[in-house]
Image 1 (cartoon, rainbow, N blue to C red):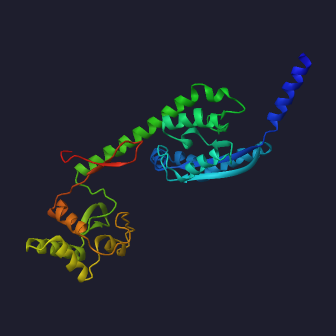
Image 2: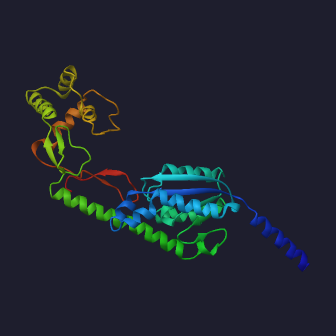
Image 3: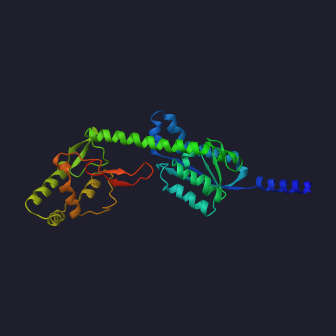
Length: 304
């Protein structure tokens, strides 16, 4: 009986050794890495897309007998706390459809910097879908060394990665708040009627052409014209609306709410009439990100 048992064990081991894995190579680089790299350029070079590609390809070629096809999934410019990454979502879809059954990353932070998301992936989804997970920097291989994923290394590393995002987000908010309180303009695009000073992007200069239109809007409104009447006059005169005007200036401006709209609307006129910037008051920080993990904006109370 003992010999039969050993023969069965040897047969199972051979089947496992001959298992061919469909590999998914996941690569991610974000602004977080660039911020981190300011302390030393080596951090940026280490996490660059090119370097990650090289490391994963070297592992793949060095273990080519274990793998069949290999697919790359790349997210360049996506935060690790954001789950809505194009490459990442494609990776999850291919796992669900069983197109791949092995995932490899340079390190755990590439997969996710969100502690709870990383835990659900590694400890739940990958286990249920029988996905082999490899993280090169931490020496993790859930198939060859199951203990490497069951110890304290994975959760502790995920907590450190999550905390890095929190500290980075906090530092950025502090810098932006200081600039706002100092009167520096921190927006991506200047308001209609202004332009950024080419010598100091935190200072605004008057855009004479657009400023004349703004002055006209105020004059007409003070003369008793309604917003709709002002809209009709502006469109009749063929004056480009703010979003179209900015695009014509070559600023790369895009407003998803206006799309390719080229006509004035009552809302655009109303926004100009209510904008205190035209009175000389720099009003910023009207919206904030809900949290460093949830990248949705919410309006700030006027008191803040």
